[in-house]
Amino acid sequence: MRQFPWWMLALAGLNLWPAVACPFFLFGGLHPFGTSESAWVEGCLYILTQLLWITPTLAFFASLELYRRGWERWGVVLAVVSLLLTAAMGFWVFS
Image (cartoon, rainbow, N blue to C red; front, side):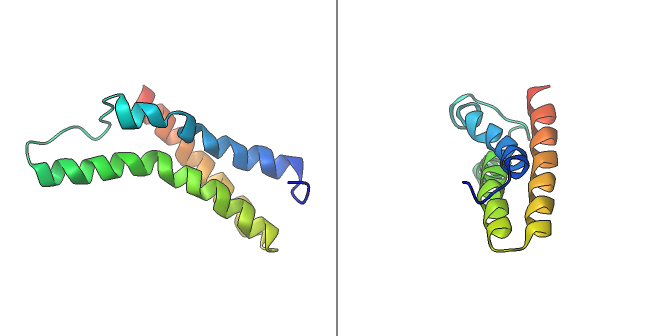
């Protein structure tokens, strides 16, 4: 972790908050997209709900990997976009 500046770790580290909230998505009965009577649609809504916390968590690792490989700008852009997604998800789900 010493190969990353502290600001990059802080920026990317904020993307791990959805991983902390994953029990709400997995076991809390959280349905941000509503429910459906169709089992197929309900399965698609479940997958979409799980992507709300998996995507920023994967972006954390991807942004640090991009930064480490020398693509600093793309790593920062991915971290910022993921941070915006995390903030929007938190506002949308928990409001």
